[in-house]
Length: 380
Image (tube, rainbow, N blue to C red; front, side, top):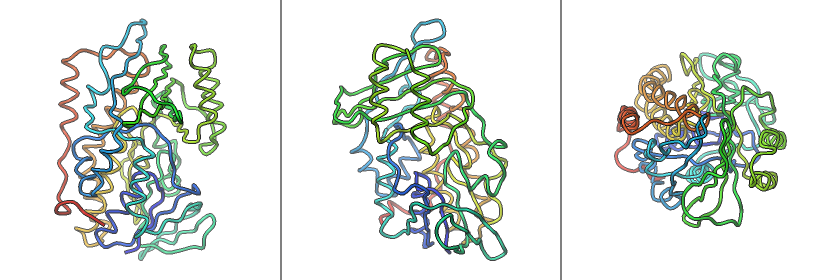
């Protein structure tokens, strides 16, 4: 079966890997002219590590581990938070988003067709497949289409309805960018924190490469999601006049080529498929960066979706239903963490003491175990 995947972030290439492993023929279309870089750090634990291991990528991910340290901030009363994200999330590994995308691309590019600099303009389903009209390329037919094109998914809008029906804004925006040539001690340090705004300096990987993470509270903003210059202007306006070191960071931001900017929002849908089109990762069930589990969710979802298609012998109706059954519980847990994370870590709510951390750890443990669609690591 020929499967078109829209989006070359994390979910798309991961799905392409597993589809190819199970004998399908995936094609990945990405509107950017090259595989995207940049982004914030992402943590992995449990089942996501199992998926990386089965993809024979775990050793490479270990080599790029950022070794996250503790973070702190101020509550509404000006006092410090009482806990750290690393204690609550219990990451076993943390890696920069761009690094993971690079690994997934390298693991798939020799056996998977990538169409860069193009996107889906229209989808027409019939009993036998999907006719896809592209913005630039010639029309083509596929047996299935998977939308892995993120929070602002065009696939979701084209097939399921307007964005406003499904996207829930959490009142927070996240920014991340690197500081090329700057080295800092391992760990995380708060540079500036007031209710509704934080700036943290991070050291990434063993070489201590510097990175900055900014967060600010805001209602939904109207902007062009592809206009990076506009994104930087929004951030500069929000942090104008804040802190002694903030002006310098804003200068670095203007020069950054690996700039990441997006809302903390969640996608809530009653179903993730319609006919021969299915949604994956943030496109269908974004948990928000504040959950700390979006990348894990994407990796696990790709593994499950491809595995269920293989088990069903390509019967998409059966496979899509099984995929939803397997993933719904995990998504519900992660979205709850996303809502709590946006409130506790960045919007000024004090983090509570050890008993609640224990409860959070219990919540994280209530995640379904992976089905064994493959035996042992899968090596392309």
